[in-house]
Every structure is written in structure tokens, then in C-alpha cells.
Amino acid sequence: MLEKFVIILGTIKSFASEDSWFYNACKTCNKKVFTNTISKAKEDGSEGYDEVTVLECQTDRCNKRTVVSVPRIKLLIRVQDCTGIVTLTLFEREVVKLLNVNANQLLDNNMELASEGNFPSELRALINRRFAFKIAIGSFNINKKLDGYSVSKLTENPSIIKDLDAHF
Image 1 (cartoon, rainbow, N blue to C red):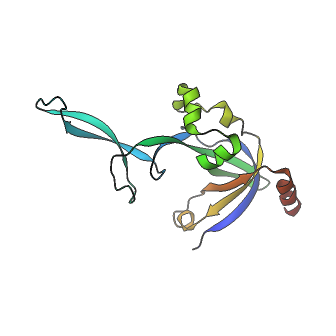
Image 2 (cartoon, helix red, strand yellow):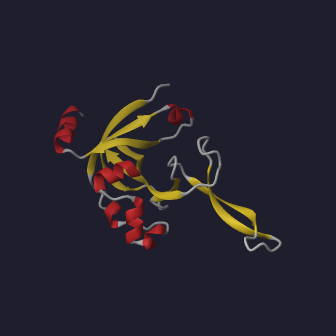
Image 3 (spheres, rainbow, N blue to C red):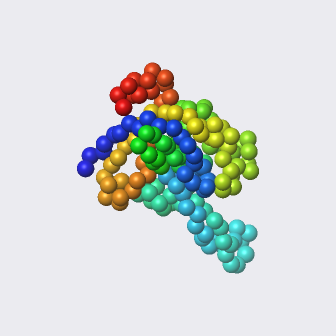
């Protein structure tokens, strides 16, 4: 099945998760990194091993090698339109376009936001705002019967919203 695009005209009502609003991404491919504990010979030359925690990227491109990570925004939002509510995922690219701030900047200002459930005020400001969301529905969603969709683009341009309102 080819990827299909759908436009949703709706309002962000809440965050869909109490989890964190960011993830640690591989600097090369932007996919989530995983921690792994390995044994490494002691650096001082003495016998034995030290346990070291490293970050690994498990994509084919990065081939499970040790990588450098950067925080990236991944925000699960609940969007309501006249037909119901759907969960959408906003990634950093779209949030930066809207708010001119990335995960690094948000964390630099407020390290306490790194704990679960602490959403920055910049992100909370998205609640109750109305957007036109362009989402992609691909074979991954159909085959796995997943009803969470990623936002490809979004706008709150009044003329676009007015035009969409007139058609729906």
C-alpha cells in the first residue's frame, strides 16, 4: 500500500502521554538510542574490568555502534475535531517551526524538565490551539493496526483554516 495523506482540522486538547516529551536520538540518524552496559579493560592498566554504559543505535545505517546522542522532541498530542479524538505525534522539526525552540534549548533552560511528566510551558502553550494537520497513513499503520499517526506538516494560518472550514 502506498502512503496516503489526510488533513485533520482540529484542536490540541491534551498531551496523550504522561511520559517524557523528548527522547535521546542518534546524532547521525535521529532514531532513538538505547543504553548498553559493557565491560571494558581498566584504563589505569590494573587487572579487571570496569562496567561502562554506552549509547547504541540499532538502525541498519548505524549498525549498533556506539553513538553520540542529542535530545529531540517527540510530543504525543490528543487532537479533537468534529468527529472525535485522535492521537498524533509531533516531532522536533514541526515544533521548531511553530515555537522556534528545540529540545536542547528547553532542557538548557530547565533541567528539571527532564523528568517524566514535566512539560515545558512552551509546549503547554500548544493546548487549545487549532491547526490543520497533515498526517501520513502508511502500510505500517494498516498492517500493525496502529492508530497513532505522525504529523508531516501543520499550520494555523487563518486563511488555510478558513478554507478548510468551508469544505468540511
